[in-house]
Image (cartoon, rainbow, N blue to C red; front, top):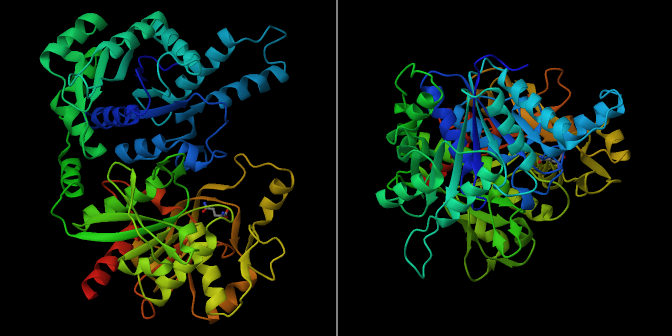
Length: 570
Ligand code: GLN
């Protein structure tokens, strides 16, 4: 049921994908929240996958797991980071999810023998979901991002649902179009025509944008603002310039300068409840973009980044952001370097730097594989699946342990840390995970009991151990000191776990399991005592998913503190 007077802002993309609809959605969310309105942010992904969980990260980027366990698009991560709070499963929708509900209802005679069609049944299912999301969390305004670009076949039903929402709630619905204005090198002038065409395309769907966000490499000048206003039927002050910025976190500050938040509230006929307080956010942006901050150099040893001729770090987005937040808190600039674990398996290798844009540059020349790791102040092995590159990761972990370089292992990075310890300290040469070696002689990491059946039945979608689970932290450990509490909740996404049979021998050999499930059965954190290593810690969960700009994750902060100390010693 629709909530009376609830407000909806739809964010749509024109001209091309990848222009920052997610950042616009997140920024609008933050501004309205700071002005006193509870907001929820909704992402609509038009693909037919029921969730993002089965997609390859090199195709799709990171899978962001919500507290509830739903596997979603990385934009949901940005939403949570900007709002500084958790979102719910209702805040995410894919075409697959929508169609699955409609088909299940049809199979259960829920349509009472009628034809079941895209219009009205699928469209109405979408509307129901939008309205359901609105009634959660006491939200007053929903900002709903429709994925894809205007003119796509895939998102047309969602745009149609939004059009009906405007008819149902004429005073409560706004459309914001995020468009791109190219400045072709050969012409040297910003062109408005593609945006005009995109608006016309949207008009042909019966939708008129109320606001235009003009993304470009350059600032939009007055002349072009006027032109867009006239040709696109948008009030001139509602045409907002959004030139490229060095950090996405600057966006809400720029939009606030342009009074976007107030204009949205005016258009929704809502008063501003309080002045948007962005002081804390500004302080964070200043620290995060401070070019003069001393550098701290971190290697991420992973494998998901080749996509055709391009290399992207999207697969590890939350990890990169979590590092940035803790670095900003500590007054440092984290220089993140990508190390391909597959390269570490070779005799020599070269490095690729993660640039601020997310692109990864290549450096020439080769050095002895693991020796390249010696120049870093800290090493991270993030989450992952499958065999490729894992021996390289294990080599990196051994190097970090032996050379006392701070190490932080996330999920697979924790499992491999334990395998490395079992192989090289416990001397179980054949220690492995049954994910790779089914009949391993020493299955130090083994499939979880409830996962066996899912795998046997080929049930891969949404069946991992997903979402938030509590962990108890042992007194006197690094983990406990970092969190400063006994019980924590963290998000998970895995099928394998530390095999309980090996816990005692590993502990006898010096490894400490500092976090466990409340019943003591599942090992959630493994670490080496500080007396042995400055920071060697792995988590079965993904701490990066809960790191926020204004609330950096304590484990990332401790890891970076150790990295700073390591740099001083060098
Ligand atoms: N592949 C491992 C598992 O399924 C680790 C998963 C991860 O890193 N997210 O348990």
